[in-house]
Image (cartoon, rainbow, N blue to C red; front, side):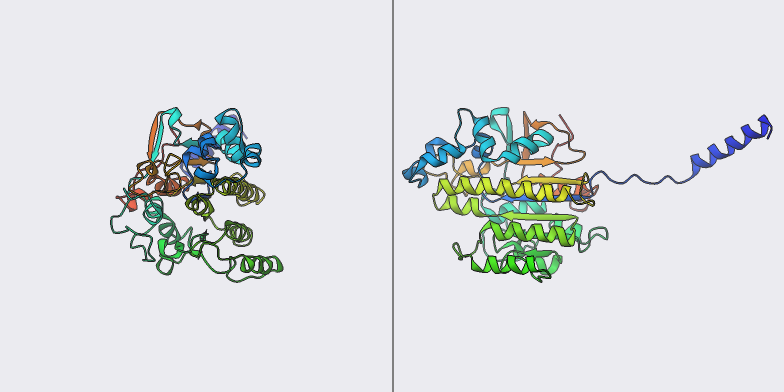
Length: 365
């Protein structure tokens, strides 16, 4: 082949390559895990154990010494890492945290009510709704980001939610949304393995201590089994013990629940990272539905009469989330989480729901 012919041949090949459709790169994030800890205060998230509450009068603590040994420390950094080791050694290192006032970061609720159902609606729909003004079992009239994703072809039947609070099916309007939703009863709806049947048997033996809220163990274990067997693209887990123990003025058990919740989140994350469809392609979002009082008298409570309950915290980690740690000098709202769930998957929830808040500023310094 002459030099002239060779040049002409390669020019044709180059031109063809230039106009040929290019294969789209696989998105960095294909799955999102969302975990909320009901009523978990920012004070413990960023400051760890608060010694003023480690008394019988303030926190119902009969024996403070063992709790001090487990979670105490000379600095806030030491205490918070003992309380939530995965959160502070992994999430804070590899992701971003919002809501630490010592860094000029404010995360807040915008619904003005500062309790659970309005908070979960704001968090999952992306905006507050004055019609949702109680914790009654009323079906949510709003389409949440989970329902919106479940109705899109790429996610249909691959969105699931597990909760310790029995109102989850109402918050997600399970009948309309079609989301696989477990908020009461056996944690595995249709057990297919001996392990799943054993999990249901274990859950059945636990006492109905709070009535509307079950212990977090069957909720978390059920979510883990569902992740392994059904491979959802979006999985939401609503944990509830922290709120219940706080209402009961049991600061020791509130701390213990926070520690175990952190351990579950680690297990969920590490389980996902061992699965090919999740490893390196999964984001994690953490949040709470409301804050709590700031002092010894009102730390157990929340609602519009407890102004400090407006303050919350949030966190994000995963591919495409810069490792900026605790964010400084930034204000965010609970309502921004919904659009963030979708945006991490490359979807525009705000375009579909203009009332929704914009995404968290996780790509900005």
